[in-house]
Image (cartoon, rainbow, N blue to C red; front, side, top):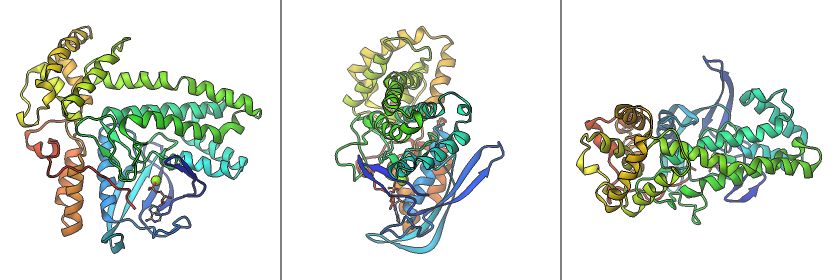
Length: 420
Ligand code: AMP
Ligand code: MG
């Protein structure tokens, strides 16, 4: 598949699948069309200087993290299979090769539109847009303004996606326009990572030196990416370019309202609040600030809230310091007073919170351990154990303590790398 893309803000007119091969489309048992793609299968016409291969590490990483994302109810490409090839892949060191089979609603990205738009091939842009509308947004067909509606729908799906990322502390790491999918699925698990101690400026990717794709920048970057998308559609939106720009701007004018509304919805639900009222946001902002100042783990802090309500024990060793802080003494009564206004009994509220606050997330040091053991001794047992645990991220079992605990100073992973 050919595509272009803005990488860290700079336009590259020709990227394309350099190490992936799109096999084709299949209709699944629910009648939904899916793309099947091999990643790491060898040279393609877009490989440029690369070898088109993938080492085992990035394949295991994508397999584990994309499957975990799915169980966390976040739209994502899926991993159908991971196989080692028996070949050696030459990077800084010699590594075992592997191929991932990936399934997606679509592999078309903003960069695919940029590829044809940059070549001023309007009929190809139209063909691609019609194809995507037909496949992913069929209700737009036969409307008065399908291409403007297309822009809006992609914006809405991407907002729903990124707010979900934020709600589990996920940092994608390379939100270049070629990694931003038209279907609204998480795609490309290169340097992605889940945050542990909450810090809004957190970056993991070794190549993101300016923090462009930091946790809290993801909302702004999405808007920036969608603007690049809109530029490719302008000639379809209206022949009169001034009018087209005006129409696109109207769509973007509601970006922040929609984003904030969606964000409030997902974040407040984590606190047991579903009937979002004006001013509720401050509860979330204060709680996040409390996490930062007490260096508390994002996942466990949210999960602990329901234990605070039910007074049920939570292994002491993983109790976030936030809950014994002065901040919490001050914040807790405000939260409880607000929670009292919600419908439902205590049990319902606890169940609701536990259904959206995972206890198990793909922590970096765990993924790293699975990769190391597979790579150095061909031992996949830890990987399999992890994968099993990720299947039930909302269930707390005492025996999964190893998979629940944050990293220690010894095994903390502070840098991640693109899987090339
Ligand atoms: P990514 O960082 O995965 O978004 O990739 C950016 C671009 O580099 C895409 O066009 C990839 O296909 C290409 N690429 C990454 N790794 C390789 C490789 N080993 N061989 C050829 N192309 C690659
Ligand atoms: Mg990519």
